[in-house]
Image 1 (cartoon, rainbow, N blue to C red):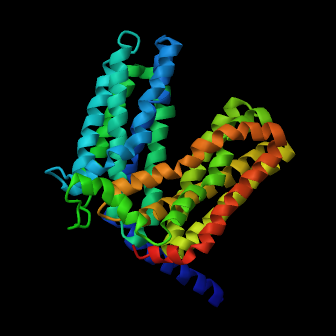
Image 2: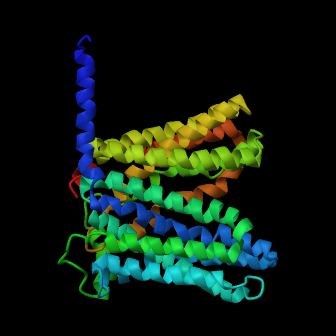
Image 3: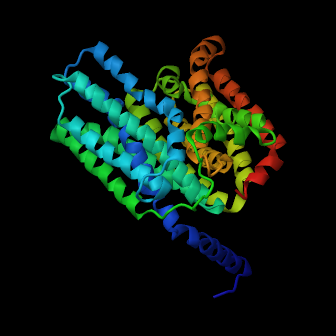
Length: 427
């Protein structure tokens, strides 16, 4: 057998890479991120799309079904009560896990109560239960985000976010598509009981999780918990520029995503089944792969390098839909476009969530993260309404080209602030 220095060096490099990742892969802190993400993502569909399907099958009036969408309001307003979770600790499992366990217990109980309620006979009771579940779920999200930020070390954040996203998206698949399939076989009541049992499994992850780093600088009063996060943040140099970057970084990605489904069905001519299988099913797998790959790369690249590279990939990936618009109905082109866009989006999400975590002061993690994530969602809210008018005006290929241009200001601002971002890498 001939000796090849090049092959030998490649093997050594591969082994060294695996050895460098081994401490992260065996970390107890990282291990709990998957069940935490699972617990966070499970309730969303059970008070949203899955519940809407149950109401429809049971013959509830369409006007009542429309009103049920209001139960999702706590997710958009969760920053209002996040200071309570910074200020107070429950007398078990430490500052963060005590709140997580409490919200998970309420969630399991609330989902079980929904299982024993008939939407057709008692829509008001079902609405109240759904609101309780949504409020508890939003509260759980507040504390899980704070726990992840307080717990993970700087080098672990990328992988931790990737595992959390994987658990979250998997849970949405379970409580969404799988729940709808199960309802045909075991009924809605048994389906919701099963979901409550899965929710209870998330509590095991909370019990097994390690305690966060202790902080002696917990807010001393509610006034401090309410005003402290804002005072601390705006006392930093370039605070306004950081907030603008938070809004702009995922703007192009959000802009393109507002009409992707409509484009694939009406713009190119794919069937809803095609879109469900490729855009939703394959797209989910591509997003998870992108998050995991992005999280792994971040252990070597650092925060700024990951934000810049993944941000560029996010922007360029929008052009794949422009190419699809030019080509027309082609399954290969559709698979390529969906794969490229979702892999890039998953990588960008891993870097962006890590960036939000690095911005938080550990005294006010719950409040600051809730506020920053709410600010980041503004792009999805405000880019939706003008997108349809823009497509009517310029056409699909030009629309996706403009979404790519929309991502450029965020990348320019990121490059301009690179020294600030480097300074966050030790947080």
